[in-house]
Image (cartoon, rainbow, N blue to C red):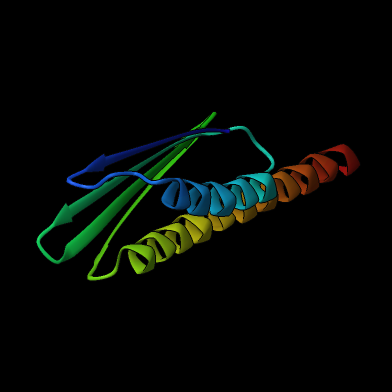
Length: 109
């Protein structure tokens, strides 16, 4: 996994980087594929915004979130990404099962 973290009007500390890295490593390992992850953090007055883009072979997923707390923003946006990746994984598994049963039906006909 290649993780890129950028910040606008915020300094990316080791604590922020390790928090994001730990959550994304777990998520990507569950996915079972290598991925390029770009996380962008922004601060404007009292608004903390996060954007995450995950690119793997064949598809990409994007999510963004805005709250008043930085860590809450990061957790919410990572939860959105996890949900989207899980949904994609389930769809691809369902398609493989469906394609396999269709091929089996053609052989029996």
